[in-house]
Length: 252
Image (cartoon, rainbow, N blue to C red; front, side, top):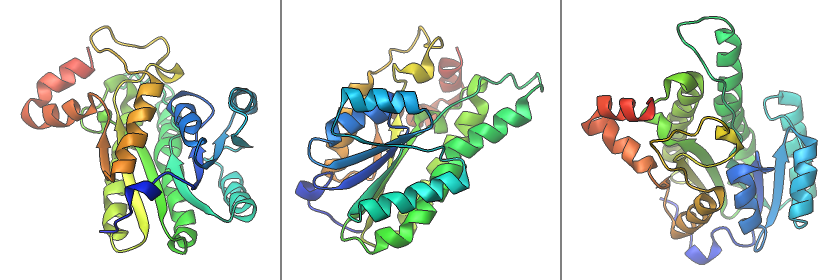
């Protein structure tokens, strides 16, 4: 397995964070830009400009990563303008609330959730790997969720997409084991962000985005390849020892 000294992880790197204008992505960007060059991308230019105003060190790029042309144009721009680019954080994500017993709009919801939460990050990994193979110590970080173990019924396609990304990341870790490319998965618990606005459950206390970001950076620097943040580890164990109880907790 490729070993990198702790002192070189997430220091003096050029990092691209998708969905970096708010939430955990922005919290990561604020921490990482102190010792790295950080580029954030998002679809919403207003949110990007707001993030830049709050953290002037950030480099912003407006891009819909689900659009093949836009995504490839962004990667080419980043490589040309920042040839030291060596870290991709696939953080962008969104969900549709689904009622699986009511088929109206299900196909479109499924398509959009799979495209943003699975297809786009996989394509970003695929499209950048040849370049990263040439870098001394490149890194890919895929952000998933504890819902890969215990899906939330009203977020069925989001949960399924993240489960697919979880499986893909494990396969990519195996394939890249002998390369100078670190592949890391971060599984998040419930985070108090706009992502969950209006849908925070009463039975689970959410973590703040800044708390999650600090833990992610700490654990990545320690060299962990699979990182369970907060209570996301409980979802894994409940799915093994008491799956029905776990599903009841998640779907209460």
